[in-house]
Image (cartoon, rainbow, N blue to C red; front, side, top):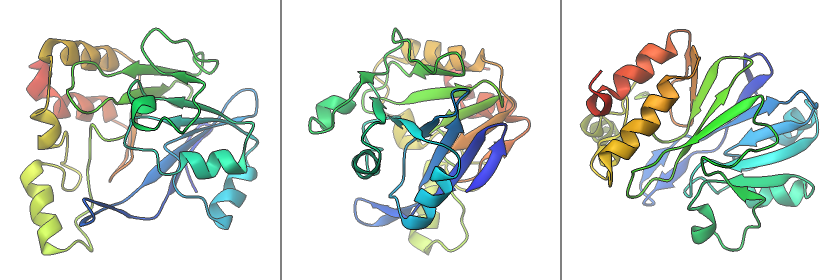
Length: 230
């Protein structure tokens, strides 16, 4: 567990393999709410050490799936903390009908943690139904797959080549090429990104790669300049 700011931590999980070939690092974000309860985004697979670290912070109240792909830890953590409520992205239930969800995080949903954590469901994409979050007390934007900055160290030559090709390698990474190519409604997606850039934040947590402490808004704006024209 790594502290990232005021009442916010990250925990790296086990690598997973995309298409059973390409290794992806995983990371979950833990926020302690004013209630003392915990809000966990994109939970990784639990193990004794991770569970001990989480339990030391407080009771788990909310488990959040930020898109329909990031589901790997929801069931295991729900089994460990059955009182926790599950919140999910708009298309999550369609892909995971076996997981009970408190609510789908469309843009008209007011969650009980909204005074501390804002959310924006990204509209206009044909495949990715991602929800982006703002942890207000620490000024941290939390993005899952929309921005990726994979570390090149330890990667195979194949994976390094793929990361360079799709624009997600290292600290200069950004929005993956495959995401750029699968937009259904460019104007709708642009409105979503402009709404996010209107938030007050200086830090960035992402699920895959290098996070940013300080100057994150400028970097996020750069990453989406191809869409916003900024």
